Image (cartoon, rainbow, N blue to C red; front, top):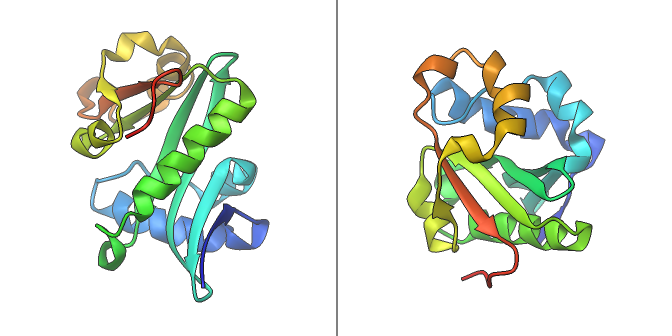
Amino acid sequence: MKNLRKAKVSDARSIFQILQQFAVEGILLPRSLNSIYENIRDFWVYEENGNILGVGSLHVYWEDLAEIKSLAVLKEHQHKGIGKKIVEKCIDEAKQLGIKRVFALTYVPQFFEKLGFKVVDKSQFPQKVWTECIHCVKFNDCHEVPVSFNLEEKIA
């Protein structure tokens, strides 16, 4: 059975393990298990036959701004549309919340560009930079590319 659903507390360890695989490779920034528990309501999981294959979260920053974070799909299940479904679900949720713009910081901007995101300057997201980025070990040598999606535009 295939299922894209909101994460449950019982999913936290699986989410952590998936994210950790990519963090070790430097593809994603690491998240602590504690951080995942604290933000579990932000997460979506894609589950198949009782196994979580992909994860992603929508984190609200301000009245008009949210970030897609911690997007990861197990390597053996990539290129099957799972990541796209998670991003689309996050965008739908942002629309329901009345958010006007969604952004992501990514090492794979092409993936987001295919979904209608545009590469932008990080200075457009001072809430992110001064609440999270400033504490990151990669702050002065960050290679993540900021991408933004205006919710008044149609998704690909």
